[in-house]
Length: 265
Image (tube, rainbow, N blue to C red; front, top):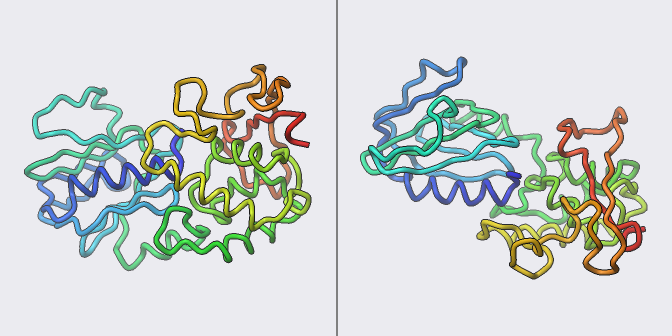
């Protein structure tokens, strides 16, 4: 499931392939920008901002979001893509590399001076150079009545967390995902653990929250409904977050929660 760490690694791959090089091809396969042509533009940098990936030239910023199914792959010119071409939503190429964004959930071409406005609602970026734990704690604390999982999934509170990290974070802090933020313990400790957890995984392809980097042993509760808790042996349960008016979670897959009823009270 793409989360902030996935986008961080994708930005690193694209930065290596595109930064400092002149685009020889830009193929936007979305109706709104189908006629856009950035050939001749030099890519200045590629960065991640929470779950958003930004490819910047002097004049333009290409913003993409992976959503649930998207991914970026980099190929040599002429190399087979290995995925159906009809799944490609954006192709950026130079003399050395071809970057293809498959099944991207969002593709937007912005003037550089409009980028900040497009992302202004995002909270502090957990993997950003300007990470601000004080601001993040204040934003989480302000959601006192909201279920903690809902608040943590809201990108206006923290930018970068998805459902895997949120479920694992709740387990590690010993709180049920549906407990209100006000009753979930010290918000600063939750924010600090969220930052440490995603930072520790930013270079890993497979996320590890248990400390055991072995297939089938990497996560505490996410995706383990009906399996024994690794800590106490109680069967892990699966639930779904409610749909209250203040609930910002809209993706059905992000509404699903996993927890140990013994370890998370």
